[in-house]
Length: 263
Image (tube, rainbow, N blue to C red):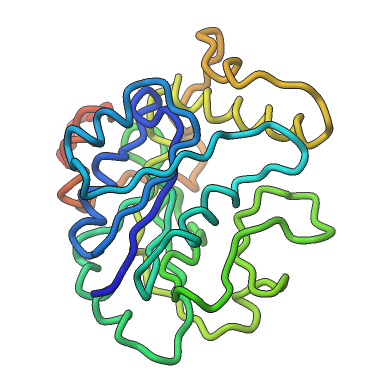
């Protein structure tokens, strides 16, 4: 199939990211798995090694809080290290449903498309999703033609989620195609502590871009707390009644509050 699967993480197990499930999924259709660890101290690396051994490569990329560092750095580490013709690259809380495995195998046989944008289903709280979410991301990228992640010049948002080629936004001029709602995003239905830590992380990152001195340990202070359940009075949230990816069903039952509903 000639696909490299890659994602990055920081204390994934402590913050309830389904990293183990992500690797299980990627190994179903990828020939190579590359993970970037940004300085975990919670045993995530040991768990990966115990489960997958040497079949998974782990690259160390220590996170730096300063104005020149951004989230594109770990993504670009994967792009640099990938040996396969295609790169499947998502966040560790985005799981590809198994019904799209054959689709991915078919897509990488194409010759005129350079990247595919995958639609996301965003979950919130115990068992809700945001109605009419338009989230999408370039998740399947052809290797070796100059793609990289970086902040867009002149933009306030320096989060480096943007896929670039030669300094231009790739989706504006490279051949591409959107593939359904293939990715299931579980980042907003983790524990309140995990969501709070992630929120604090990005707050500190924004402060660092302004030249302020910050401390990574502040992300994990117990006093931080954010309620993950959505406001159900807001009609953009609806109850999810469809099936989850098989690899996530055990995780869902463990992490979600199930109110008369089965995964």
